[in-house]
Length: 339
Image 1 (cartoon, helix red, strand yellow):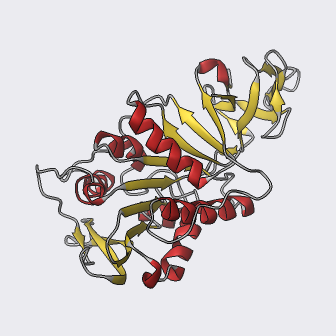
Image 2 (cartoon, rainbow, N blue to C red; image 1 turned 90 degrees about the horizontal axis):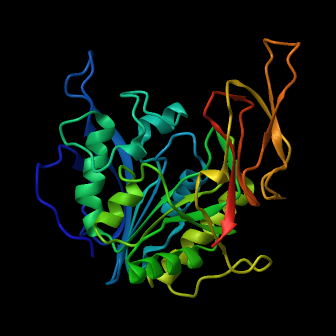
Image 3 (cartoon, helix red, strand yellow; image 1 turned 90 degrees about the vertical axis):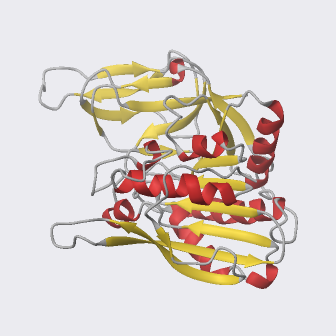
């Protein structure tokens, strides 16, 4: 179990009883003072299914509001999971960063923050910081496992994957990879992530809780395969931890997840300036260093030929820019390598 933490109390009120068995649909009341409502709150949906004795698993989605596969999968699970089949506790936040979810944006329309860069939060901060503090200080200490379901959102298309941080503790890393193997996305990506400290995944790791993230689609649409992979993966993780009966079911065609990594900046292709990016390859293509990754077009300069961008390394084209328009420094392609 995650350790308990003291410090400043959270102003968020959970309108469910975490000790009560059965299925509960409730809200987290997060204070949100406005010009027209000084005592206003935002009601973030929370669902708990609890029965018997067993581990606690927390699944979250809608960390970024334009990432949809996890939101749909957890909403379906909230309605369909039979409490009589549960041995333990399943806590679901299917629309965790609700203002961004309702706005269809990555960042909060209230405070402009990236919720996944707001941990461990601040009980006296902005909306995103207050909610992050509650998740970190009240929900994570209940957990034996946590998974935050992401996808590429508006900006990117990705080969679906479960994602884990590279951890120095080998036993801890083994537990994390075992959960990822159970989830059984096409890829398990082990990340050396820049600026990982303020993320929910890192918050769980600071508490010693096995935890995963994911990337399950993209392009601000609902990816059909992404939803199917997510729903099967969530069920597999619950079976892996013994919260529901049965054994995790691998993909009958694809088999085990392929363990890969993005080890360094050579794996990224960045736009050297603003323009329209025309890719050379679809995601999932095996590419070679030095080959053309795409062309950057400059529509305000019709005499100017497009700039040819090249891959800096060989591997699998895991992620590609979804929107054609990009700014200088935007990654337009990311290569993954077998670990």
